[in-house]
Every structure is written in C-alpha cells, then in structure tokens.
Image (cartoon, rainbow, N blue to C red):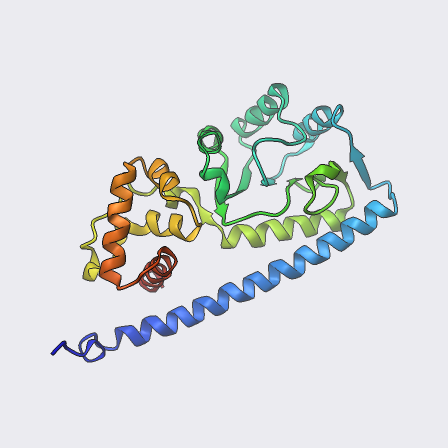
Length: 277
C-alpha cells in the first residue's frame, strides 16, 4: 500500500498550496492593474490624437529616423522600449540604430520588453543577443499587443492606434501621457521574466532534482515552458539538442504525474516559486 504523502511531507504540500494561492492572487491583481492602465492609455492617447493636439504628432515613415535620432540625442534618462516585433519599426535604419548603440555605451540605460515570439525565431534571438551585448536590460512577456518607446521624460513614440501597426506611429509630448506610458511599462517590467534567468544554465538539469520533481537547474526550462515556447525554440535558447529537451520534458512529466506540457509548467512553477519565497 502506498504511503500517505500528506503524512510524510510534514505539511509541505499545504504550505506550497497556500503559496500558490497567494501567487495567483498577486498575478491576477497585477493583470488587473495592467488592463486598467492599458485602457486608460488607449483612451487618453486616442482622445489626444483625435483632438489633433500640438503635443501629439503623427510621424510619417520618411521622417521617423530623424525624429528618433533627435530624441536619442536629447534623452539622458532611462529609455523604455516595449517591443511588438523586431521585424519592423519607425527607425530600424543603420544610422539610427548605431546612434542608440552609442548612447547605451556612453552609460545611458535602456530597458526592453520583448514578446516570447521573438525568442521563437532565429533572427529574433540574434537581435536580442546583439542588444544584450551592448548593455540593454531585457525581459520577456508571453505576449505584447502594442509597441512604444519612452524617451526619459521627453516624449513617447508609440503606435498611433494601440494595437494596429498599420496605422503608423505618433510622437507624444504630453507630460501626463508620458508618465502613463512609463507606469505601464514599469508595471509590465515587474511581472516579466529576466532574459538572464532564461539562460541561467548551460543545459537542462536532471530529472532527479529535489525530490525528483525538478531541481534548481530546471529554472530556465520552467520559465521557457511558461512563456509557451516550442521545443525547438527551447533547445535553441538553452544550447542543447531538441532530443535532450524532449527527453527531459517527458521525464519531468512522468515524475510530476502530469499529462500535458501546460500541467508540467504549472507544477514546476509552483515548486520554483515555493522554494524562492
């Protein structure tokens, strides 16, 4: 007869369940904050654009590089970059990008939030690695639904419509809207996964970690699973073979008694967060 787990774990499962409940409450509260701020930003920005206020100007593609270059030169504070895609944008020309590189190398800080889909592409991973080498701080969200850059307290360059890249970009100089965009970014940054955590191991840990349920070496794998990346992208990011990733995921699923990758990610996340609290 199998031993009673609840009797032999010293109440550990109850503690973990309570920690999980609190973590879910914290995440849901953060999501609600983000949704409220997103709605406010969308309404305030749309109203400003509709009123054609002087503080907001639509940027045409031809002038985008010069506008961004001027902002890079004028901005001394933190540059916050909320990324929708690395395939297109208002100033991806070589001259403007070099100006940004030079700015970071001079010691001006830059933070960027990327969607997990960027990690899922070879070109996207290469892009992030290049900017990380320059000194950009990077974190990853499961998804992003808009794009903007906050140039200190000077201006915001954002999509003219919150979730529609086809409408182009606008530069916003209204101090209130700049602060709102900054607050939205900072809120999202606090709940995002640091890129360093995703690359914190040369490979994936063995299935025989603490209690055989996934040890500390599994942390990068756990985060990548939570972001919804495919096995191929996980293998590429961790620098191991696809076969190694699939074998390790299968072993963890068996040890944790789950049937799907989603269940595995949830189970491992509970353990990692329980240990870290």
